[in-house]
Length: 197
Image 1 (cartoon, rainbow, N blue to C red):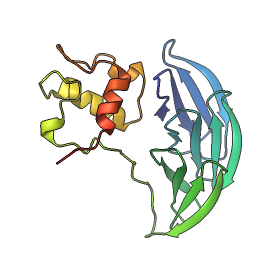
Image 2 (image 1 turned 45 degrees about the horizontal axis):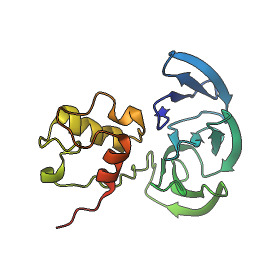
Image 3 (image 1 turned 90 degrees about the horizontal axis):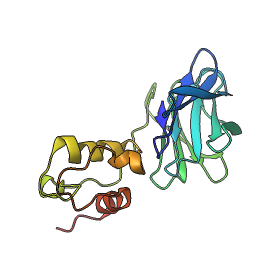
């Protein structure tokens, strides 16, 4: 399952049906069902929210879904039994764990082609998430800028950002009283700012 950066839609893979269901988070209704390869697994979304990458376990492919049309725009052959996928922070690369070929496929998202196949240990099942800084020390973890580091505000902002939630969904209900950084843009700018020793 993955959520669009604005929090407006959720994409859920259905392994047995070979589909991805699109849910509108405002109405909590299914607005589309997209047919993908056989056995879709742990899907992921590009940082800009424009495409969903879906590893298909049984067909050894990755389906690429346009979020503008909710249609498959590319099918990329990868190693055997792909299960996990992660995208680079700039969205230029996707990395797919191929569980029975013991490899990771590197996909260029510009061309939707495999540009490298990397041998790894037996049975890879996931690829670690790329998390940009906030690799920030606790003394600078006051994300909303109100002078207090709080798990229910600053911690929530960090978690939402790490899971790719952007826009108003990033800040909704997560800004503490007296905050100086209250807009999604201000929060993202702060989280991306390098820590100066």
